[in-house]
Length: 420
Image (cartoon, rainbow, N blue to C red; front, side):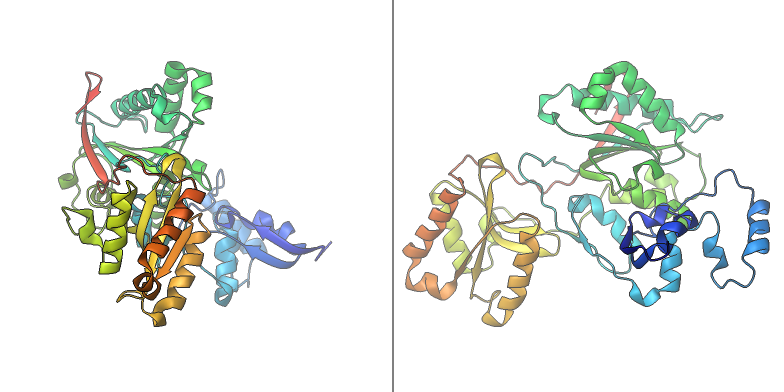
């Protein structure tokens, strides 16, 4: 019956094709959620001649005929029919910033990464590139046996380390699914089904991971030196975008070629290799954390907290935002401190600061704010209130917890079962 639901929501619409039409017809209002920069449906088992015949027989005169055919998505159709109704969700909550920055190149509007992992979640560095000198793709299959061996060895090491207990693991082959299936078979043989399931391990191509996430992802480039064509088509961008945005905390890249072998600047393989070398904008090198403080107000509060034994980090970046001070405690407890009224927080910017705080509170941050005028009149009273807030949250003085600014690591795999 037409219009039988007040609202129909089609999620992952970029993977849905015209077969979703019956659901659409039952909607009074329709919400279509998707991303045309991610993997689109495939016209599997349909010859191009058959598709053209269907178009000729049933879609003559249709202005959006091409978007009604197999291989086109409902999201693309909606984007063409209702272009003014499109809204982009710019806040990103899954990946840590060094990982998601690769995908920013595919979008006209900026993505705002809002996830700063808690102490227990953080894996430093988040990006690890492993060069496999002897790796080469099998001429008959889309399989690189030495890359597969290297990935299996690293996953075996992770699953035997208690520090990684509770983490989920994924493996994506950047060229076809055969490599992922070969790795899956080896893992099941080497680890056993119980360990495989306890780490929620999954292996596949980009399409298999659409809409999914893992704490740790392994990417296999598959092709070796001198192999493979330039990868710069739209479908390549979609696959790479999905593959490089599934990891929450760490992403491994296994390659059997060097950057200088790729000369086409539009080649996505070259862009990926460069991302694993330099994922973040250049940051100022500092010798003492207090150098990051932007005012005497911040420096004074920082000093007093450090003297009391708290673990304090100034100017913590969360996407485009910066928090004046962050105090970390045990069991992932943390408090954001904002000190208002100085040069960087004048009264006319208070509304912007408040909106920024509300945004970050939605992802779990707790804030304590203090006006510079209040602190000047009664510094001890304000500081005691801060200590009381920390106590109420169970945040006590602790040994220093290092907040690393090292985002990448480069390794060379050797067949003698070790990585250098």
